[in-house]
Every structure is written in C-alpha cells, then in structure tokens.
Length: 311
Image (tube, rainbow, N blue to C red):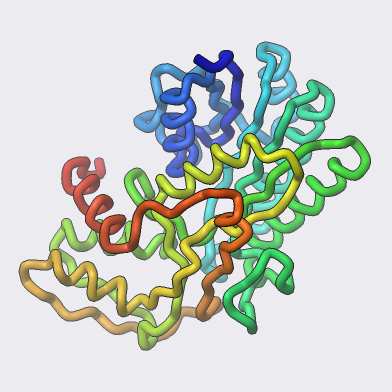
C-alpha cells in the first residue's frame, strides 16, 4: 500500500485528463482537479476526486488551491486543441498554454512540488521535412496552438534552470478513444465514430494519403503516470510511431458500416500540416509498452460511443 500522495490534474474533466484521474485514483493517489469546464464536462468528473472549477491561468485561483493542499505532483492537461488555421485564437492559446504553465510552475517552485508533467504536442514540430520526428528535430510550429505549446516548454526549461523545477514534457501525438469530444475538424477517429453511429458518410479531405500518428488514450495514460517517477527532466514523444493514412482509417471504419458507404471526397483544407509521425524510442527505452493497436482502439472507441450517445 503506497503512501497517499496528492496529484493535481488540470483539465481533469477533459478527454485525456479524466482518464488520467481515473487511473491515479485506482492506483491509490489523492487527486485534485482544476478545470473551468470550457471544454471538459462534469460528466467526466470522478466522484472520488476533489474538484475546483476555475481558470488555471488565474494566479489568485491557483494560489488558493495550492494553499489548501500539499501536492507531490502536478499534471498539466488543461488546454483546447485546434489545428484548423482558419479558426485559431492566438490570445486564447497564449492564456491556455503559456500563462497557465507559468502560474503553475511558480506555485510548484514555491511549494516544492516533486514533478511538473506538461502535456505538450507534436504540433511543435510543424511540417517536419524529415520523418519520423525526433525530440531534437527542428521545432517549427505552423499553428498558434503549437507555438503556444512550445513557448510553454521553454518556460519550463527556464524554471528548471533558475529555480530547479523538475519537469517532464510529453509531446502527445494524435490521441483518440472514449470521451474524445469533437472540436471543429480535430480528431478524425472521433468524427468518423460520430458519423458512423449517425449513419452519415465519412469525409476524406484531399487524396486521403496524409499520414498521422494515432495513439489510444490508455497508452497515453500509462506513459503519463509512469513519467511521474522519472528522475531526470526530459522531453518525450508519446505516440505509436506508426504512420497511418486517413484512407487506412476510413477502411477500418468501413468494416463497421453496414451500408458500405463510399467516402465523400472534399478538397484539401487550408493550412493542412501534411504527413507526420514521431520517433518514440526514447519513450520505449523507459520500459513503456504500447498495448493497443489501431484496430482494437477503433473498435473500443466505436463501442464506447455506441453505448454512450452524445447529448
């Protein structure tokens, strides 16, 4: 029986954050959630967690929560994902990723938190010329979201250099699975699942040849929680490291379509990132193993959303 250590999870009512909370509670941790419910939902709230509703970039709010608890770890998941260049909100991204990270880092230093775990994104790489992208590959984000994530990473390194903050930066690839919401055009597997259940045909932009690095949410949770125990501050790509085209995803979904509808072809979207997949050897070298392949992950996702239809 491990000692009751306390973990703050920002965005703990969101897609990935809520899964992390569930696992932490199952593992015997006390969990405190900070979430403003702008993208998360109260339906995802684990009733065994302590919940504070508020903005993680609000210095006063965050300080008050730190005064109430002694945190051993902080896992910063709160963000809003958008990778459509036409719908970005740079000031929101700055507040969501950068301001919040600074506020949390300051409080972690002040309160001697053991480890700050930051959910970054492979969006920091932009349109990588050489694939797979390694952790030390060129950083050249093309979306405001990626720019903000990388800026937050730099601030964590700043706090580590001058204030001895211990951190792990996790660059998540395309995470999918149960509870994933639909924001615009983000999350093709969630979108396809939604359309499949409704009986709507699936949409493929361009020729469907763009590759992505899809990883099931439980594998992301495994690595995120494992990283709490890493000694040295570092950066990790967290994906499957396997390039998968949109056409391959469509083909997997068509197996579940009783009507065998053909895809609706639409023109390439403005600002499309092209193909991407990451090198995950650094993460694998920690002993982490990927448990769920794409076929099983899609089956699990369809099963979940079929049983839990959206309101």
